[in-house]
Length: 125
Image (cartoon, rainbow, N blue to C red):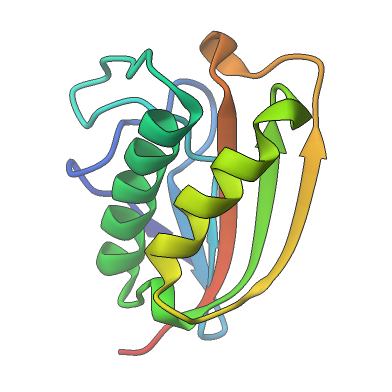
């Protein structure tokens, strides 16, 4: 197992790591809309989703992977009424690539954000 850590995404705010590589697969911890400096992006679901993807791209790059190698995403939404806007923002980041996905509404997310996303990806390097 290899721990993945980068300063280009927010540091873990608990007893966990940004991600792990095991047997050629990358498993991310959930990413929320914090900047690499730990500041909350407190905007619309579209703005928060954009920041989450910046974080995911950073940890994927550190792991030797990319969004194009993602095989599964797990999406946690504060409000399923945001699903249509979220889905449009989400789709733009994958440029035609369509990984398997789960999307659920949850009662509450860390720091009361609107979205958290985890990914599983093939390590390309």
